Length: 494
Image 1: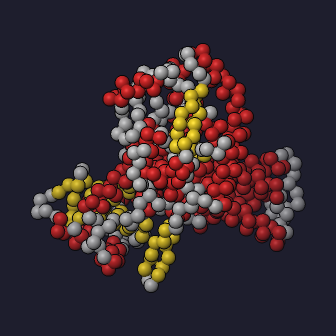
Image 2: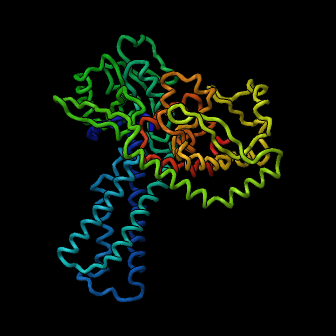
């Protein structure tokens, strides 16, 4: 979700010049692809068996011109070929982003459509029920397998034991440091920086380091530097000396070495759907669409928010009653806590929560302000003495925020959006941070699925602004799905 997703790859041809470090990375990559092929095959075989047993059971499947003992294995093989044809095993989509899931879904849908058309034209007589069940089970199974495999890969990458690209970063000092910070912020993306090349004028006669990244050369010997440190990817960021001609020549120099060339434009925190590359006068110009703050998609989002929150309130009513009773028994004071927050357009509203603190919590805040554990405008304290016993449990599982469903029904909040700020925070916003108020605040958002209270103020603002600029209904569904994992794991909840 960060600029790591903006890396624009240019694949070079593999050749004998692979370095030892590069061979290890490619071997890890091939092992991961083989694992996916085995898992996909197992899922497809199971899907076809489920389709056959569910449709026919113990009866004889007559009427088909092709025996099912032949058609079923052929369907599995055709499905695998379709996945391969749509590049579902391409290393450029594996392990990061939603494109991998979209390609798996598209490959399954296209194959289903092709078989349906072929069956109609040639009157093959294959049971439509068998096909429908097989494709439904197989498509869902493939997506679940990809999700599980990706989570395993992410955990291995975060520990430094999984397949990652070894990256040589090339550019001006400031841009190199910015790109290194961005890539390290999300280690599960699989880009491990192993060195940097900076302009000749900045290269000292003695070895240098940018932070903890070694400077291994200048722009004159980028291919040699990549080979020397075992890099399998050269990431080029902004620099006045890297003209279009020099960048094109660098691509030529990397041909046959097996080293990939990626370009990180000086355009950060803009999501893929807003970016379109169009060739103009032989130049691949990047067109960036303006963010959308109104229109039909906003109306659909509002309808989905209110409908889903109304259904959730009705479904969770018994749980809400139990929580209310526990709060009342545990400590003196009201069940609900209503606090003024700032919503879309700077309009203030009262956000509803279950009370998790003692009734004089605001009066005690001044005494505890020196123990603030955040670096921004918010107050956060891991062991806040104002929190009640039941309150700690509610905060751990984010159950204290369930009454905010009422705010969503009333149109003051959204299910997904930036964190609703306090008026005291908004009063100190600068021009950039104030853009958080262009959309409705959310019960959950990128800040919650990325660490909640463990995030720094800067990272929390960055994620909120990213959502404001790049929101989509598909992204909302993804965030809602990830919210369950964040709540179950209690990441950053205190």
